Amino acid sequence: MLMKKRLLLFTLACISASLLDSCHSSRKTVAHKSSRQPKFIEDVSIAPHNKSSVTANAITPRKTPEKTKAIASADKKGIYADPPTTASAGKNNVYPASYSIQNEKDDDDEPKLPRSIKKKYAEILGVRTKEIRNASLYLFIDKWLGANYRRGGCDISGIDCSGFVQKLYAEVYGVDLLRTAIDQFSNCKRIKHSRDAEEGDLVFFHIRSRKRISHVGVYLGNDYFVHASTSNGVIISNLNEEYWHRYFAGCGRIPKGG
Image 1 (spheres, rainbow, N blue to C red):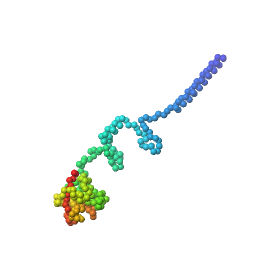
Image 2: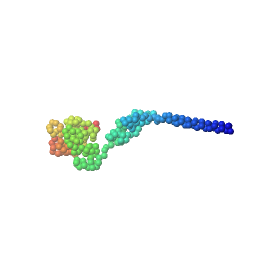
Image 3: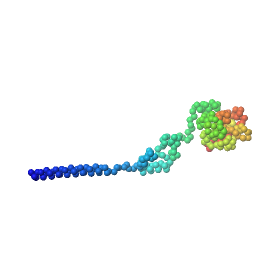
Image 4: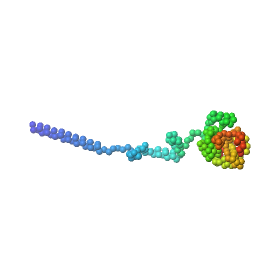
C-alpha cells in the first residue's frame, strides 16, 4: 500500500515538472520572435521622408553595367536609342540637340502649292496657272499680303519695303541681304530694262530724289512685283502703272542660294 502511494506521488511530480518546462519554453519562443530584425530591400536608395523630398524619384533603381554602357555609347554617337516622343520634346516640340531626325523630309522637297493659290496669283499676274510654280515664293507672299507698312518694322504686324525684301529672300531663297534699299541696290547686278527681269529679281525706285534709291520690291513676272508700300502695306503692283513707271530706277539680280 505504501509503495502505491509513493509511485503515485512520483508520477504526479513528473507531470508537474513537464508542464512547467513546457510553459518556460513557450515564453522563450515568443521572446525570440519579437527580437528578430526586419529585412530591407536591396539595390534601391530611398530619399528622406519629408514634404520637400518626396518626389517621383524617391526610389531610384541602380543602373546595371550593361545599361550604363549602352547610354555611354549612345552619348558618344550623339543619338538616342529611341526617338523622343512629342510630349518629351517639350511644349514647343523642340528635340534635344543630340537627336537627329532622319528621313522625315528630303531637303529638296518643294512644299505643295494648293491649286487655289495657283489660280489666285495666275489671275493677278495675268498668266497661265501652270506658270505659277515657285511654291515657297507664293506661299510666302500669300502669308504676307495685306500686312501693314511700318518704317523700320520687321514682322507681320508692320514692315517696310527693304525689310520685306530681306525677309522674303531669307525664307524663300536662303540668302541674307543687307537691310536698306540703297545697300541692296549696291550689292546686285544691274538690269537696265524690266523686260530682262526674271522672277525673284529686285526692282528699285527713286521716289524722293532721282539720285537716291528709296524703294524696293521683288519682281514676279509679266511686269508685276510684290512690295511693302507706305499707303497699302504689302501689295502686288505693276511697273506700267503711271506712278511706278515714273519713279522706276531699274532692276537688280542677286544670286539665289549662294
